[in-house]
Each structure stands twice: as structure tokens, then as C-alpha cells.
Length: 284
Image (cartoon, rainbow, N blue to C red; front, top):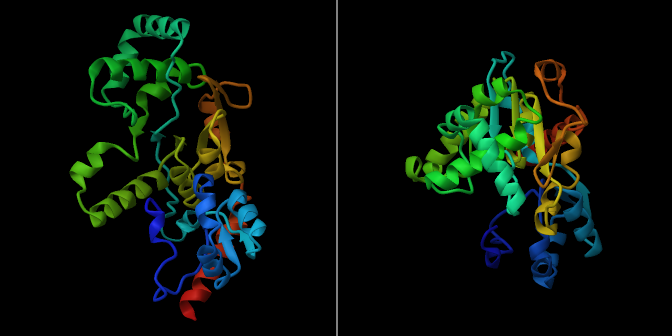
């Protein structure tokens, strides 16, 4: 919740706690007696990640690892037919800050002028404004890093999406419209050949809907962000990023590896358990 002062919820709500996450930045807030007493009423608490699980256990709250509820989206949105589209969804980009990195990125732009300008027309860098110079620089950073792993034709022909683009608030001013947009994206991902993303709430649904996914993991995350991902990234094919140096099993990603790529099925038991628990709760 972005407004933790609203916690605990109203007593008129009868909750089922699954896929529950407590961010490490707010752990002191959740140690309050009112919070612990509330959670104890609804034990055991299904935790989305091991961090939340260990935190609740340390507060003597009965809990278990449930993983994320988005793993159940395949119940409705799985598509047997897969197309040729490859999506980059908010791929993590390391923005070079040292003088040598900046110079190398500028040289990359000069030597790959046409490719980068072509990418800039469709690439959606979620951290940058529409300032042309910053946009070109951001795309240059992306191209320099990802072209060492992905073939040029994949980068140029892929589709690029940002889940937190300001465009959404302009096109979808209401929550209902945003939900429709989210459904549209899920349907598109369900038919994709491959999704490469740094968004955990893109990667997890892709598992659930049976779409091959590569999760780009920033190796230098702070504790607050790392606590959101721990225990979940083991489900994915991981592309590590260490200050702009990408590594996918120490090899390049080409069409052959994409064709042979498949998701691990270790997540399926959690999806099945979530479906069962939710169905039993609603039926009761």
C-alpha cells in the first residue's frame, strides 16, 4: 500500500491472505501490536516472498510461502497459439555515469547511428522524459548493453512496452480503463514468442500464461527492492546485469537459444495451491 496509515483494513472486510508482501522499508510499521494482532486473526498468512515469510515468523505469526497470485492467470488467458512477437517490457538499463562509460556510449551511438535512431522511435524508457537528447542517450545505453547479448535483428524487430508510461494515465484516466489495458497486455503476452522484462509483475504472469520469459535482474538492488524479488526469481531464466554488463549463462542469446528456451515448471505447484485455496475460500 502506498498509504500504510490505512492499515489494518476495516473489520467489515473478511480477507484471505495469499501472495502477501511486506516491503523491508516498512517493517517497523508492521511490527506494531495492532498490525500483529490483526494478522494473527487470519493465520496462516500466505507470503509472496521468503522475506515476508521470515519477517512474519519472527513476529510469531504463522505463515507459509504462497508465491504470487498472478501465477494463476493462465486459468483464463493461456493461448495455445504463439506468434513471432518478442517483447521488451521495461528492460533494466544501466545508465552510464563515469566519463569513460559516457564516451564509450557516445561512440556506440556514432557507429550504430541508424540502428539506435530506429530503436528510439519505439523504445519506451520509463525513467526518461521526452527530452530528445536524454532519450537518445538512454537508447544508446540500452543498445550498447543488449546488443552484446541479443542479435541486432531481434532488438530492431522487437516490440517495446513500459508498464508505468505516463501515456497510460493520459489514455486511461480511470482504474477501470487501466484494468482493461492490463488485460490487453496480458492477452498480447499470452501469444508472444518471448518476453524480456525487469518487471516482476510482467514476468510472473508470463509464467502463468505459458509464455517464455527472461527476467533481467539488476545485481546491485538495494534491500527494499531485493526483498520484493527474493524467492521468485528462481522461477525464471535470468539475465544478470552488473553495471551494464549482461550475462545469460555466459553466452549470447540467438534464435536457436530462444527456440530451445522454456520456463521452469517449479512454479506450477504454487499456482495450483493458490487456485485451490481461493476457490475454497470463495465457496465457503
